[in-house]
Amino acid sequence: QVQLVESGGGLVQPGGSLRLSCAASGSIFSISRMGWYRQAPGRQRELVTTITSGGSTDYADSVKGRFTISRDNAKNTVYLQMNSLKPEDTAVYYCNAVILTVAMTWEDSWGQGTQVTVSS
Image 1: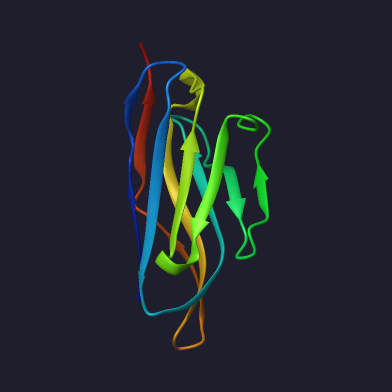
Image 2: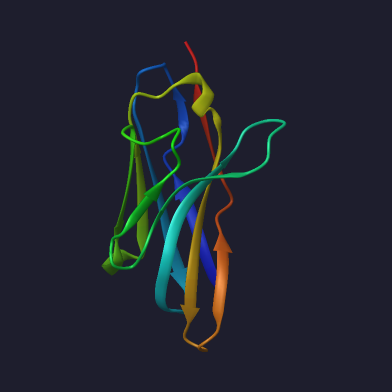
């Protein structure tokens, strides 16, 4: 099995910053794409950003220039640096990873979610 554990959420004032982390563990052979999604109350889960194993990134228009995704392949960890936060960034943030297990099967894995609240 594979497990994703997120950390770093919390309450921050508008204009502030937060850094989320997500560590993958378990029967991992390699990790392909990693990313972050979010879900606000009453809304569908939406893609925030993704990063490939080679470091290519993609961002939702709403976060471009404010959020930065990065990963440490040696630690099987992905990060999300969030700057200039706005109230509309308030959501539960979920980590996602496409993982090739040691059994040579692909798994689309999700973290448990971490709450980010932007409010004064």
